[in-house]
Length: 271
Ligand SMILES: [Zn+2]
Image 1 (spheres, rainbow, N blue to C red):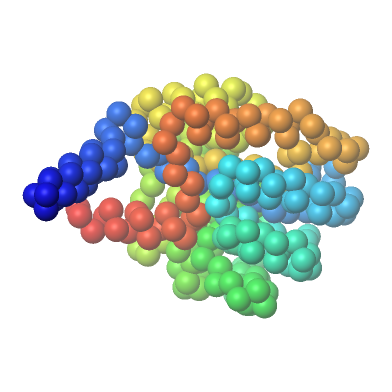
Image 2: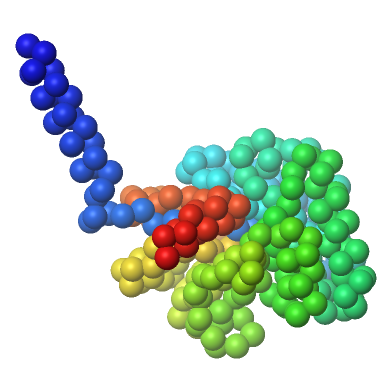
């Protein structure tokens, strides 16, 4: 009798392990990032603040429904202070998302001024008990000074590389530069993974079939409103359908930037 129990337990463990090492369907790490910001180029001005609550809550609902833990890059620069939206930020954090920093005008300042800005952004997050370690430069403008500042102020992940944005460079390799993980947006055909244009389902399928084990995508809170700030219901559906599609087709593992940093560091330890 005991022998049978042992044998059955053994078989059970064996089967559950086989299930985990499912080589036909290995997990694809999926890093979802949002630039949580004021500006929308087509609109300009401060009007976008009016839609921030509505759009953020919709995005949070989509994420909740899909069990997505994302990274919200909070704009804090001379144009906007998104840290003023205390209730929304608390919701984002309570839902388990990571918050990072998003800064426009990275090449407008000298080293000292820029460092002061970045440090005060980090300081703002402390009010929410958050230690910010992930960063995206506005318009993807990375400079030598900025990179040095990020390394000096304890940032761990830089998301400012967007293949296809300024140059038709499709290089989207993930690597460490000192202790800073360079985590580029995944390049698609001449552009990076977002909801601007192109068939997201098709582009993602191509990348996964090309054996990418990590995909990094991004969008903005204002991607789901029209120019007159009414909700863009079509875009909302597109985003929902996209997540449903990839989840049905692949073994998707959503990761926040900080988590991905730890994972990548762990992977590197075997090399
Ligand atoms: Zn931005």
